[in-house]
Length: 393
Image (cartoon, rainbow, N blue to C red; front, side, top):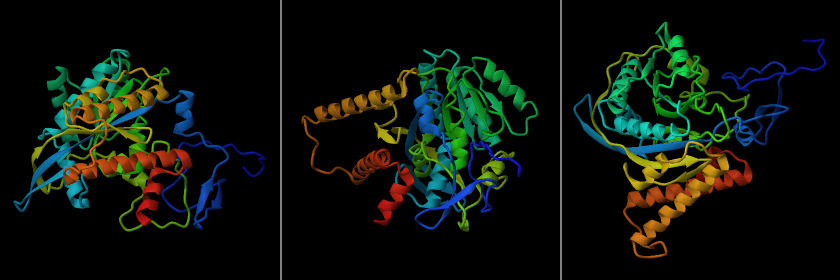
């Protein structure tokens, strides 16, 4: 390329996992002394959304009580959506995804109701469940058959006919497909408008790849819906859909960090259990799902038990809305819900008395998230950066 006077480089992933410079890319030093790659022009999710070439995404987060028995015979319990230790969160998350429990069953039911609503305006709209392993994928397919009366297309990483199954599904009007984290292996189905994130993979790259399956617009006004567990990492990713990624030099990975590309490759390998053949360290005894909140454009809406009017309001959103119409409708419904809550208490002003600790914490977290979202739109800073600054302060 030496004789060239101009070079045009295009990429959707302007970063790499190591600290070697990318050829032909300039690096600039930021205020913290870290060298970051510098691009001449960036076209991200936010401007693409404004141009109508990608869909807006509404995230439906579900919490719930989990109980499990460890290999030593101890019975433990935790609630998704509440502050948990790393180990407790990991086990509660996996208990939620266990097909033997009720959490995943209720979430799949809710997702199918949402798909039914979307198909009123898009008759061929489809749904995708991203599973952790082969065994869960087959189990989720059986649950979907019980819900819909029809089986789902199951796509496994070691299936030689996987590509043909995906192509056949993309051209049909079947409702559901279940894939084992194969988000980077040819899952290109523009009619996918509802998703269930039923995997414990939690890297930023994998999450972005997964959500990318649902944002490919066919006509203006299409709205995508993704159902996921109330796990802090996932909620943070969901609130940072507009975040730009770049390549950073001078930064050595810590002991518990691994290159995201390697994790993505590992995720797409055949796994018949979440621990690649190892015995599960616990047995799920009970899992229950409750609608926690909806996230859109960095803001949170709603919050109530599964089957509540708030949950039904979000599941019943029209499948054909412009991004600004989604925001207006969500704000309107949030105001209506708040007014009905005040009316039920017989007052027009919020009560000053504090309720149970877990309710107060939940409300404070929602207030914090909304304020961070507003500050993000004012300053352009990513949500994660704002949260980190607040923690340091």
